[in-house]
Each structure stands twice: as structure tokens, then as C-alpha cells.
Length: 478
Image (cartoon, rainbow, N blue to C red):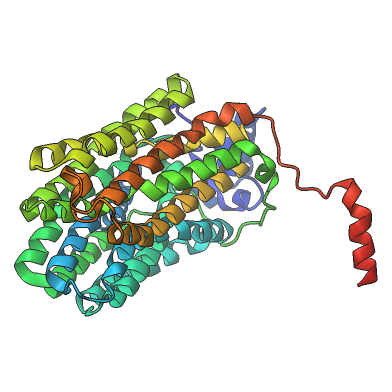
């Protein structure tokens, strides 16, 4: 569905200050838009014209796509490979009796969760000050490299919490989102950008495992920092907007009427619940494989397969949501993930079922986030301003669920009534409650299919009339 958009071959700088050129360019149905373009070009002096690169093709468009794809790969592949780091931390770097050991899962959930949550602050800022996008992205790169270098010299879990968990993820947010906002400048639609996470999630776990096991923590993180900076810096050359950028844009009031919409809260709560369960298998698979006495590479392979199969899952579930009832796509993702957890992960004792689980779970669980645009379409219809607000909230709520799942998982692992009392994965050390929680969380997020029953219903936040006189008397007495 790459519908071509009409293009302005030339545009003058004075016109940009007075007209929303991109709105006209992206809306071919605007009355008189063709006549307006011809009149504008005729009125402006030729020596003030600036040539714009073509959209949906050409060297500059594909150079931007390659640069943004590299950013996507670098930023997300490390958090999605954290299971490898966690296994190394708990088996090699720190003693099993370390009092701060329970903080290590939180490092992983923070490293991805903050990227989601901080977008709620970064996106409004760069929309208000679009001229600062490049500076913010460069500062983000500095923080990412600083976080990785700091992790190289960490000697306590709290140090990793600050460096790999907080500094890196804040930098990743600042680095990635400003560049990602240029996508619609260059392409009317292009999903290739988001395949970077899938490829990075396949390659980086093996790279991290090799570096950690062969050279140790310090050399591994210094090498990763060098690779990160060495690949990101050249990408900045073409990670730029297609249209001239204003230094500041007019602030617009945020419409909060959606907060009264019951459908919003159904989707919002389901999204948080799904995020609470979604990231736990990926974090613990390498450690789970190690506790099964499998090789270190077995856990890394399982994690890589989980990341790899998420991409076809995104395509299938997203495609289904375009053509079939949205509730079918929701159910396929959530129920499919829950069944994989209950029936495969819970009964895993050898490598083969572990790899089968990784493939099935990655396929079904990865597709939930691709349904966000459909959720928003039910809530906001065709309001583009409300669309961006809701998308930011869904991204941030996913991060919230991710962050909360870290300390919750350590509690579940410590207090397991199934420890050595059940067979297979359910009875392996403390994994039983973790497996049950993950599966139940996925099932609970299926509540999103109930949304049709709440369409058109709102939450009344007004003070009942019968209570108003009492409230007024209290205020008067005070």
C-alpha cells in the first residue's frame, strides 16, 4: 500500500514560513492543491528555490533508510540480547551469594523499558523544537557509548543498573526517536526500517556471548562501545530530514477527552499486562538453559530464534488485523503465547523443546505491539494529533510493564512452592511461578478482545449533583 504522494519539485524558503507545505504534499485531495503549487512556484523567484529530493525512492531516500535501519539495529539489539548478559553476570561475574544479585534482572528490563517510557518526554520535545533533533540524537549517541564504557568498569550490580540500565537506555531514546520521525518525510510507508531489531536480535546475542566468554566483561563492553560508535557515526551523515526544518513549532493543546473513553482504558490496561509478561522469557532463557545443564550456546541460540521468529509473527498478525476482525489478531497473539508458555516452556527439560518454545513464543508474542495502530484507530478514528498522543502512551505503557516485570520476576524466582516438587521446567529451581505468571499475564491481556462492548461508553468524572451542596458547604466552612 505504498500510495505515491504528489511531490514538490522545488520550494522556496519564504513559502515555508507561511504554509504547511508537507500537509499539502501528503494530501492529494486538498482542494486546489495543484493550482496552489503552480501558483507558488510561479510567484517565487527562481534564485530562492531549493530542490527537494524525491520521495519513496532515489539515493537520498534509501541512504536515510539505511542509516535509520542501522540506528534501529544498534539501539534495540543490546536490550533484546540481555539474557546473554544476565547469564554471564549470575554465573561468572558475581557470586551467587551477592546481596545485590536480585538487581540484575532489573538492569535488563530498564535497558528496554526506559527506551519506551522516555519516548513520552523525548517525542513531544522534538516535535516542539524540531531544529534540535540532530543535536539530541548526537547527544544520545554519546550517552549510549558512555553507558557501555561504564559497564566495562562496573564492579557491582548497582553500577550496571546505572550504566547499562539507565545511561544507555536514556541515550538510546534520544538517539533513535529523532531519526525515526524523519521516516514519513522520505517514504509514504516502509516497514524495512523495523527489521533492524530482528537481525540485531539474531546476531548480537552470539557476538556478546563470544566476547564475554573469550575476553571477559571489560574487553567485551569496550569492544561493543567501539562497534556501536563506529557504526552509528557514519550513519549520521544521511540520517537527516527531507524538508527544511523550523527551529521551533507552535505548541498545540493536547486533547485529553480520550481519557473518558472506556475503550482506551481496555486497550491501555491490556497493553501493560501483556508487557509485564512479554519480556520475561527472553530475559531468562539463557539462564534457564544453563540451569538445565545445557551449553551456554544453547541458551543464546534459543534467544536468537525467539528474536528471529518475531519478524514473521509481526507480518502475519499485522496483516490479519488489516483484513479480519481485530479480535482474531489479539487472540492469536495472546492465547498463542500463553499456550506456548504453559504447554512447551513449562514441560521443557531438553534442548529440542526449548528451541521449539523459543520459535513459537517469539512468533506469537512479537505481534502484539503491531496492533497499536488498530487500537488507536478504534479510539481516535482519523484524528492525526490524537493518534500521536495515543501512540506515545502505548509505547510508554509498554515500557512501564517492562520495568515492573524486573523486580517482580526476582520475587517469583525466590519464592517457589514448586521448587523440586514438579517435573520439567515447572520444578526447575524457581522457574515454576515465573512460567505460570508469564502465561497467566498473556491470557489476561486477552481482555482487549472485549473492547466492542465499551465502544461509545465514557467514564463520568463529574461530581454528582446531590453531593455538590455538601461539598460547597465544606469549602465555605473552611
